[in-house]
Image (tube, rainbow, N blue to C red; front, side, top):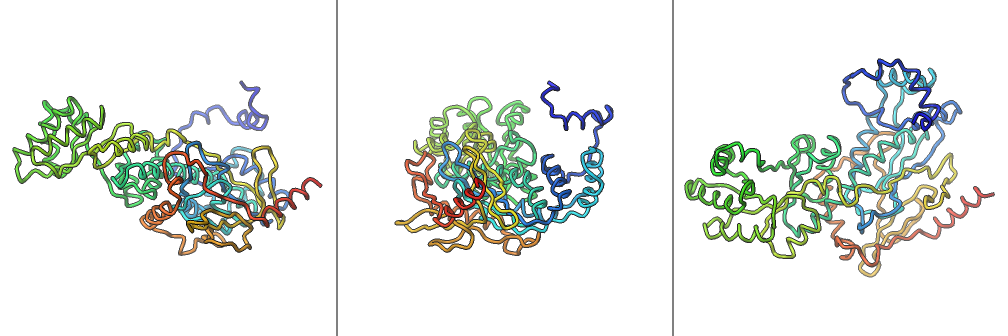
Length: 470
């Protein structure tokens, strides 16, 4: 196994005292060291060559759409800009880097004074995006633009993938509210919190995640667990206890026999009369179509027409669509695992590539990984007869509206880059609604959304390629 470890890693490991591997040091969460090692080793190499301040442009884009997706919903920009604006290396971080014995004193002295001074152009959060379209471009000193690569990819990838999944579920729900129940199955705390943000942008109505609610001022929605019901002698006892504290609660009725659970709710309603204020019941297992119909009948016959039915339990967009299509009397959906890990497509090929260095276009020619050089712009035409995008050079002019705007200048966010999440949510719903119907559908479109490369950009690509080959 040690034969597979490269020489640099092996030297690093053997130079550290054994006891350091057993230390359990707790530090306040800082993110300057959330980067891949090679970002910093490359930075030192650039520094040693005197290339620190050479201007460069990096572009982040998806190489392709994940299987089954007709579009992706851009998300994560706000997180990135906040990170850029506050990025610096603490004494503790520099001390740790020093302890690795991988960096020179002069480089560590430089990084102590690190400040992000790049310019950023980006597509607004909530915009549907397609392959090769730059979600953001970072322009500035190459060493600064390179160091942030890992963070950029991590946050755009996570939030865009999850926003895109949520948008599909919201679409399938046909106007019924969708609630995020996924925190316990998320891949870590940050993922759970950022997921709730991405879901809200995509159109969900609330989250059970209290921390996300605090951070992003999201509507908090929760019901109850089976364990609460099991803690009481009877189901009715559990329901009575809960609504004593939370009269307008949602009661989970499938701990034992689902329809008997609904009848328990009816019995309590009769007892309380006008004091009964329960908002909904939740069905979490079984044949939801049949159970929802039977539950609705029981509730309606008892005069509880206003009590809603919430469905949950392993749902995704296809199951939600089936419930809606079959006319199941379900008023809302609680979605957990399959949304918060985007179960069918948890990853996509998001890349962050150098497209210009010191005034010269740069590209990759690797098989299946080719890139497009230079700073770019995307124009979107939304006319029924001419729907589609054009990717061109930044100084071109084309029909349609340009999608990338300047959001940061010399490391400082522009005021217009501070977009409230609620506004981004409304913008996302509007932008999705403009897409052709077959692109909005959860089924794979027979004809993909049209995206073309401008003639000038193609010509520039050929020119750069010729310079590389010659």
